[in-house]
Amino acid sequence: MTTLANRQPSKLLMKLSRQLYADESERDRFIDALTHPKSFHPCILWCREPDSYPFLPEPPLPWQPPFVDRLAIGTRPGTHPLHHQGYFYCLDFSSVFAATVLLTIPQPVQQVLDLCAAPGGKSVFAWRSLHPSLLLCNEVIGKRIGALISNLQRCHIYPYQVFSHDSEQWAVRSPASMDVVLVDAPCTGQSLIAKGDDAPGCFHPVQINKNANRQRRILANAAQTVALGGYLAYMTCTYSPEENEETIAWLLARFPQFQPVTVSALQPFQSHLTTMPCYRMMPQDGLGAGAFTCLLQRLPATSQPATTDLG
Image (cartoon, rainbow, N blue to C red; front, side, top):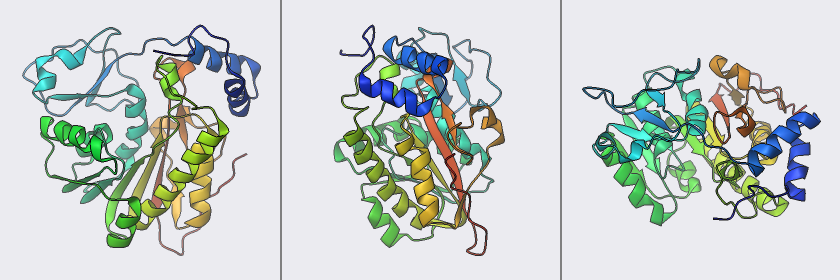
């Protein structure tokens, strides 16, 4: 496995650190988290209650959902029989952070569409937190659909339907019909480096721009499927502003009927790169490898558009 661990940071990583932080000490902490990866607490999302709990969880954080447990570093919950029986789903804590914005959405919820669903973690989280009448799981990459279906079936998710449509097809065939739409967008995956994994080219501007353009296309199509009063949740596992705050600003400029929603529980994670309610978990804080998340609501056309200030 090739990683940045114990290497000198690349020029592109240094450039990103300067883009993210004006403070030199914070830049150094960010770079150190990527060049010297550390272990993070494994995390499980309970899909149903067991007769007895086999793990001793870490103390929960103030924003942590009640159906999620962080476990001691080194715990391997995926090998436990309850995992195979579908009692819980193993999920990175950064993913839990990103999906926690869904807890802000009022219920009841009829239809939830997860546009980029495989392998299924955000879909399971949406089902567990929102209790929708129907969960629609979409995955355009055919070879990933098997894992998605397997996880949904193992965790006893019901009712659900699985599709493999381009996001444009959803915009054309299902306009203004979804109560909640999730876009866990394909991205450069820079947070993989903080886990000690490899993500070739993740800091290169060509890769960043390529992913940002793809994200904006998916988001534009996703926005058209959201019903009046419905919600659009956008999240990534990368750090580049182009893929995160700047993509949200791009969306709001073209779809002013959407407004970012303040998620009070995540206020300590407010992005310092924007005044919009967008939230970041960064690897140097030791909770997870990193994630970005933003929840938007579609308002009547007469409502005032949200700010798109990136200052």
